[in-house]
Structure formats: C-alpha cells, structure tokens
Amino acid sequence: MGDGMRRAEVRDKLRELIEAHAPGDPLPSERALSEHLGTSRPTVRAAIDDLARNGLLVRQHGRGTFTSPHKISQEVPAAAGQPIPPAEGDWASEVLEFRTEPAGARLGRRLQVSPAEEVLFVLRRRIVDGEPMALEEIRLPFALVAGITPDEFVAGSLYRRLREDYGVDPTDAVQTTEPTVTDATESRLLGVPPYSPALLFERTTRSGDGRIIEYTRSIYRGDRYRITSHLKLGPDSG
Image (tube, rainbow, N blue to C red; front, side, top):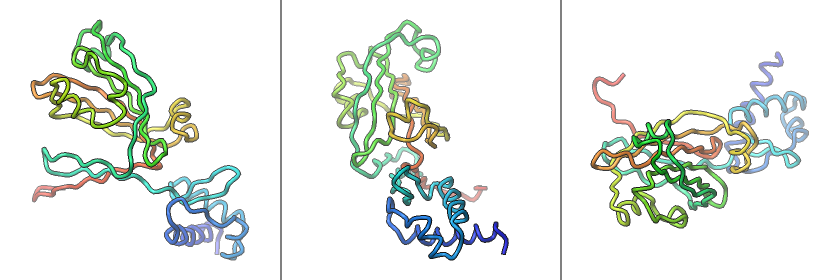
C-alpha cells in the first residue's frame, strides 16, 4: 500500500474519531494515534495537517490537537420579507471605537451624502458565549442619530433603537459575503492567528423613504461561524 493511500486511510480513521468526539475535545497524542492505527507518526502528522487545513481539527501550540469548536449557526429564511432570526448563542457587544468624522469622497458616494457630511463611526466587537466572534465597522449619517451614545450599541437591537428613538425605519438591505483572511489588527482583536480564515460581510441599509442609513463592514471568524440558507426551488431552478 502506497504512502498516499495510507495517509488517506488514516485521514478516514481520524474523521471517525472526530465524529465520536464533542466540538473542542482534545485528540490523543500523535504517538498514541500512531500506535492505535498501526502507522508511522509522520503519516499521522500529515493526516492531521490535512484535516486542520479543512477546518476539522485545530492545533494549539504547546497544548495539542483539538476537534474544531462548535460553529455558531445563522439561519436565513427563503421567503421575501420574512425576518431573519437571531443567530444562536449568547451574544454581547463591546464598543472599541466611537467617533464622528467627515464622510470623504468614497464613503460619501456609498452613503449618498456629501464628502463633508459628518458620519458616525463605531467599531464594536461581537462576543458569543464569552469568546470573540466578529468585528463590526458601523457607519451612519450623524444627522440621523445626533445624540446617540456608545451604550446604545452595546445591548439590544440597533435597528429597533433607530425606529423607536430616532424615527428612522430600516426596511431593506443589500448584503454581500465573501471569504477573506484576518489582518494583524483583526487577528489580535479576535484572538486568532494572523491570516486566519474569515467571512467578510458588507451591508448597505435603506429606510422606507429610500435613504441610505447604514453601511457596515463585518469580519466574522471562519472557524466559528456559518450561515444556513433555506431555498425555494421552482420549476425553472437550475
């Protein structure tokens, strides 16, 4: 049996072992695994490397190898106009930056305001079950929310607060999602290694009268967050 086939077989055995463990559980040492599987430690190490690249295992320096933590799931319904339910887990927010600044040319075009108009910039860290999950850069035309405080971004729904306290009614949004990796600052704030896989969300929100009221750029940890979409398939679906 060639080394490649042996490595693939060891990968399959490790997958079975992962499925038998809870998320975040430690795996036996490479030595114990090689003895249990009857193969060399380099082959076990190579198979673990493969599974770590696929996100099924996590290596922690000085501690060992662990099954990947449970991913926080966000359910996205298919029906137009149906509200998106909150993601699972116990979410909290921490405001890291809070300031006003001129929109500038690029952001002014995105928010459809003049470059000189004041924009509120808020950077907040989202924490789930006590662990950093995401960084959100929120930008709002300051004229819409004059008097808003950092505390109003910590607890409760921002959209509900806009409706009830500022007379701004968010009605629809366009959001894009793409894969990315964390830079040095994002890695430090999220507690992950540099260049870790992440999801980049960009959302532009409008009110009922067509005004753009929000632009948010978010980085979510790719190892801890996933989205489940519910699709309605018609007769012409591909």
